[in-house]
Structures are given as structure tokens and as C-alpha cells.
Amino acid sequence: MLDGVWAVGAMLPSRKALADEYGVNMETVQRGIKQLLDEGLLVARERRGTFVAELAAELAAPAATEVEPAEPVKVSPRIGVVVGFPEDYVEGQVLDYYVYEAVREFEHLAALAGGSTSVIDVGGPSPIPQGTIIAATNDLIDAGMHGIILAGCEAMEMPGAFLERLLVDGTSLVLINGEPSRVSIPQAYYDSRDAGRQAAQHLLEQGCRKLLFFSAKSPDYQWVSDREDGVHDAIAMAGLPASAITRFVSSDPAFDVHYDKADEFAESYFEKHRVPDGVVASNDLTAVAFMNAARRRGLTAGRDYAIIGFDDVRIARTNGLTSLRPPAKDVAREALKLVLDQIAGVRGPSRVCLNSHIVARQSSHRADWARRSLDLERHLAIPITA
Image (cartoon, rainbow, N blue to C red; front, side):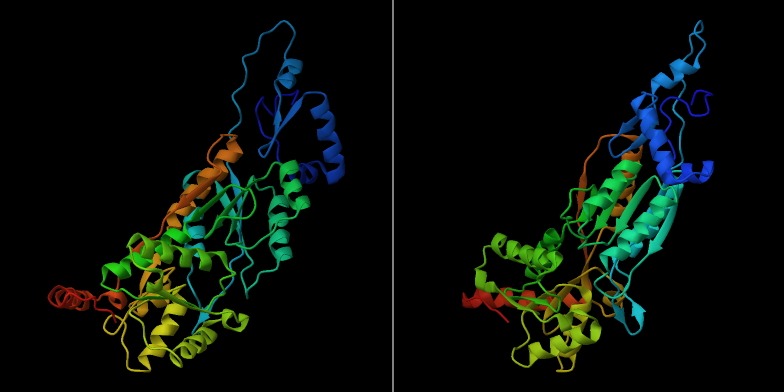
């Protein structure tokens, strides 16, 4: 610093990077930085890092010479990404959930911004062990990342020691999720409740008046309960009675594993119930399982009933399923803004919530049915329901 190698305002590399450069251990580096902080040569800024203070420039300058303050050194951001999204398989292929698209877009945008990324994918069978996610994050911090993105780590409870290390090391942290996190950390996510409202409203616009909320996933998942709440919101906004919505939701964790179990769950519905007017399935995997079980009974989506799912994964497109597409690219863009602002010390929003949009396909297209229903209601003066 006194030699001018690091100018005023320059952010120090991570403790790990300094230890590697000077061939000492982390404890020695930490002691040295603490001494320089005490002497006023460095300044620590919360959740941003450690920077060269103005006093260092004053000590380095000749007494009789006024030195213009140096411009802060621009650092190309290095951002680590931990993908901790549980995998679901259909016919041997991993479902292409929005998290993977968001990560690809994030890497693309980070490169355009002059940065670089390192990705560690710890995805696997649900649930992902917390220790696996923390270990991957620590590896990226040790590699000198300026910021960390945790993508799809929905249910994670972060230990205090882990968060303290991020603070001491000056590493920024941002979450990419499909639901608001339980911890107070900057985050870009999409509104599952609004998605549920959009889904139900779409079916109501197609002429459905009796809806089923169908989920092979447990309501203990926040995104499941949020989507169901959104369906109830749409029913209330339409002025329909609460009885216009029924639910068939799993409480058995065995149905929470993969597609085959979702198919079994759909079969259990048809053993006791008739096909409903319209179905809001908690995700695309569950929706396709319902469609297959109905098809085995000679029932066709879009003709005998309407159905909509969430996530717009590959099986939705290949099965003609109407679905709510998450704003993956927008989430990636906002996450990049959040982490770059943190690295630069710019104050901004701590959380950004975005909305999904409907991709309408033949599974919910009941225009002919809706028109016939309206004609009958007009002539008979009674409501027609499926």
C-alpha cells in the first residue's frame, strides 16, 4: 500500500488469496489485516470487503508534495455459483427446471459485464444435504470469489458461523429461489402465489367453475402452499364461493420422490373421484401424471376437462400442457445486479420479486365448451358446471 501497489479504495483480495500469494497461513494474514485495520491503513465495510484507507496514501506521499487521490482500482468480479436444486427424472432425463436456465443466463450476463463465474452443481436426490451446499460455498470463497450465488437452495438454514465467515471475508451472497427465503439475505425470486392466481384465473376465463388443486408434493413445501393460496385468491376475486375449489394433496412423502410415484398418486385420485371441471396441478410433473391417469380412462385434457401446471419444463411442452413459465432470465439479471451492487458497495433493494407468465396450450383450451355453457346459462337461466 505504501508503495502504491494498492491505491486508495482498492479492495483487498480474499484472505485465502493473500495467504497463497505470500506463502503464509490464514491466521497470519488475519493478524496482519487486523493490525492494519487498527492503524487506520485499511477499512472494513460490512458485507463488501476490506479496502485501502486514505491514510495509507497520506503516509506514502512525500511531505512537501500534494498528491491527487488515485482512482479506485476496478476489479473484474469473480462470482461463484452453487446449484443445489433437487433432481426429478422423467424417462431417465432430468427435468429442465428454471434454476438451470437462470444459471446459464447468469453466466452469460456476468461475462458481458466483464466478470467470470465458477459453478459447482451439487444437485441430486431430494433433499440436498445442508453440509454439501456449505462445503461447496466454502470452496468458492477459498478460491477468491468476490460474490456467491446460491441457486435453488430452497430449504437451507444457514448457520451463524457460515454467515460470519462471509462477513469477515467480505464475500457477497445472493439467493436465486422460487420462494422468499427464511433468512435475511439479498435474493431474486418469483412469486408463486401470484402464479397460482394466474393459473386459476386462466381456467376461470376458459369457462371452468369448479376447480381442483392437485398436488403429489406435500403442502409443507412453501411453493405448494403459495400456489394453492393463489388459487383461492382467484376464486375470491371472481366472486365464487369457497366450495368452487376442492383439493387432493399428498401427505405421504413416498409420493414426493419421482414421476412414477406421482403417477401412482394420480391413479389414487381416480379410484374415488370423477374428473373435475378444471385442474390446477402444483407442478408440471404432477399435471402430466394426472393427464396420463385420465387418458387411461378415455378422458382428454382440453376436451373433457382443463388442466394447467407450473414450471414449463420439457414434459409440459411435449404433452401440450398449459403451464406457468418462471421468469428465469429476469431472475438471473436481477441476481447479477444485486451481487454486483454488493461488491461495489452500492445500496439497492435487498429482494426482487418477479412474476411468471402463462404459456397456453391445448390442455386448457375449452373455448367451445365455454361458449356452449354461456349459451345454456343465457337460455335456461341456470349455471352450468361440469
